[in-house]
Length: 321
Image (tube, rainbow, N blue to C red; front, side, top):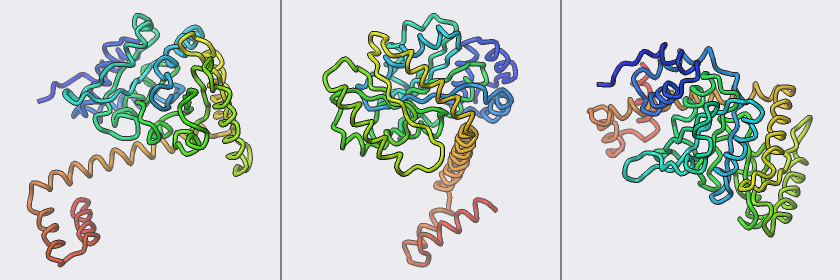
């Protein structure tokens, strides 16, 4: 039986900046603890203040190194930063492999930085299922910026756009030609492009291809819009990180002035509510697998007494009555 936690006290300690309390709240979220509803209820009044930034891109682009460099700049600006580094799951334990935390170890002793690795646990799209709730924990804990660094899974890595106010897509020279880049779904979600390892051969070509893609895309737009900047960086040397921070601040101001921030946050809430509802329905359907009702419906489909849609309608009706 799960240990009962004093959620109110835990939230108060998290808001006081106590790392153990923040970590405990995120663990409750990841474990889908029975007190998860109580946690969400206690956190909600304190949310909505953090700037949520998603950083995504293909493997090898330097996401973790870039996150570390950006962290340094944001801390120089006096901002408290929470980082959710979404790692691949270990095939043995199901836990995060912690590679990102190793690369960001220089910030480990900074009390203004909180870094948490989260395992995807088989969830597709580059994020862990619990990521939205973990973002809420960091937001409510008073962090000025929450950085979500997604696992490098290539073209399917687009879920971050449903979570972030601003999405940064990181690329590097030599990672595919312009035609291939234009096909990648991650490029369509970018608010800011960062070409890392810009001291390497091919950086100018990558930037040229991106500019062309942005130009083609803008022909379909109507009304005021954000033109994605392209920032050069060499994250391993800390070069360009300040320019990335400025692009993020410019986008934050544009979001607020255009009303896009509210639209995105409403869309985020829609996705989260839908995900929670679907997860609950799946759990209830799973409970039926061991009973007779779902098996009886399946048998009727096999015996051609019901078609699958009619069986599904009956199942939903029985679940919601």
